Image (tube, rainbow, N blue to C red; front, side, top):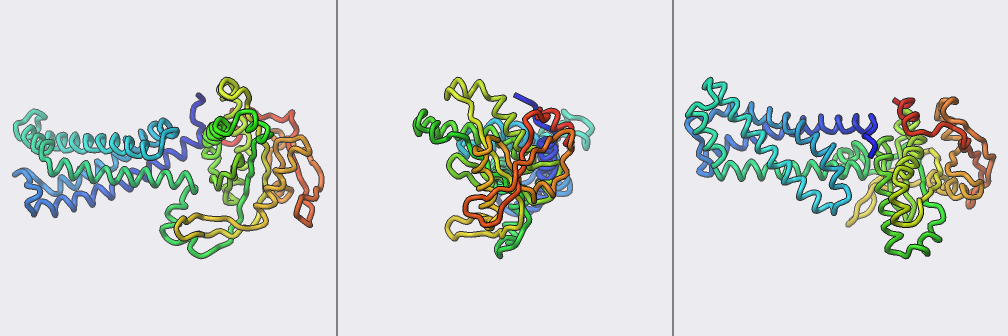
Length: 379
């Protein structure tokens, strides 16, 4: 398995940073809650209980837990459990990280007490540690609190993966409650000869092939800051805000990262399905209307001629025997390095269902397409 590209590591580090910040704030709130409980019969503090120390430890624990547990979650657990049912992944990840966080809090409390008494094995330190670890109310409250925090963190990461970076906050703030216009890039990718493949494999095995295919190209989308808009049968629609898609040629690199991901798994596909799926891609950009739609099942929807055009562009890939086509308007926005991307003009084409013709471009097959080469140039 190839190592995570720099872009994915950079995104992961950013996520870990915000987890640490968020958990530090929540640690401070937990300290306030513990102070309130110390005035009740639910939690009887020891004689050496100090609120200032608890507050400091909780905030520091939030930061350290965010950095340690967040790194473990983002770079290890999330990848390992990506193929598992979401409920199972959510439950197991929450339990693991919650226990880890409680351990970090306990170690910090004990360490701080040790500095205070000048000896880790001081009787007061041992007594305080025992009280902390075996106080059922404190244990259940802390474990329960961090379980909820971890649960919500994982949900946030999942929503962030589904809708794209920053969309969750915009949804909470009602950013898309009223329709708004956005400049976006769309990539439509479709498996070639899918009908014939489905007939050969049968519906169940073909569905498993689709699931493997979509799973294998997910990191390619994440590596290029793309957003998976929707799956339609054997087709996937990926989108970027215009500037995000243009940055480092993200929308173009996504195609090559996808192709590289499938090539690296060629043996798996050949052994399990007797074939290696090939796909074709159509790219276009323009103005769309974006907003929340639905009542019982809400979703963020893009509406506009851009999507229809991108779908039509992808549909004519077979006609010209190419795997990727892009529109002239998108090419005009891009500044592609000529030594890396060898453009080839296909022509001005009349697309089905459209009055205006669209000028299309592809890339020469002799162009440099190695994953490592593209990554080095992009970064």
